[in-house]
Length: 385
Image (cartoon, rainbow, N blue to C red; front, top):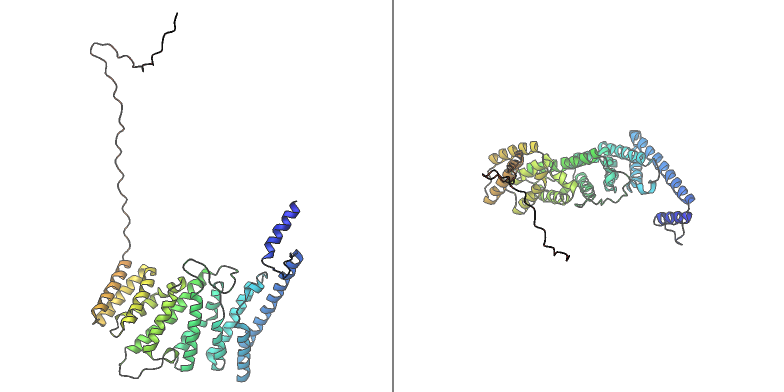
């Protein structure tokens, strides 16, 4: 009977994983063969990624045509991502992720110095990274490369880099929701490293805040001057709403709120807030982003940002009454967050009242001691003699 029960448990455990067409049960031998196949697949991917890393490390020895063909082939093979669900049973799955990051970094470093491989290298921004692969994004340096490319002067390159930045940032924002469920496309095989999840929002915030600063700086030029091409080939007036829409979409997730709460991003938003030419719709978006990011700031950052906002207000006096009121509200919020909370005063404990004691009867003046009081027993009828 025990053997039959174990057989039913084993059948229930594997039926949902290995769902055969005839709904037949899977034996232990089948499980071992599947694990062996996944391990062999992991070994092959590990070797292939090592080859890609070596080829792009020695890429300066290749011709331009060979580099382009090599980059297109590597990007086509890597664009599907790690696909860790196919190697979940292999002990090499962690090494595969590390080699994928190294290979991706080698491709991006070559694209940084050789524009021939730039287009296939930027297609790696569409890799379906999962939350457990945040370290791969951080270690590959893709966000640093995107920040340098977006700040460049080539319009086509800026458009490609900005598109890659949008795809990558929104994919990271879709990893989680407010209720904590992971929305990543990949099967979670291990918990992401805490330092990677801390560094990733910093890199995204650095990229977006630097673009906000650049846009605000360009808006501060002479309004009659011809507009210079900015992100995506648009003028600065068109790129500012585009940036705010991206930040607003990011702020709906936990990672996005960490991005918006970075001091650099908040400082850039405050510069847009005090600008006299900020449209009412844009002002509304900025206020909504600040409402998401300010509560997550540290107290020291709030003190610095309050001083910076005061200097900005003194340098650029807001002409609109509504804008002045909004700036005043933001200043009050920063001031409130800068002041450490007072310790809660413990209410005084009520004084203990003395317990009421029963009074003891004093002896009578005649010297007779009082007789103890005994309760009257109920009257019982006498028994007849």
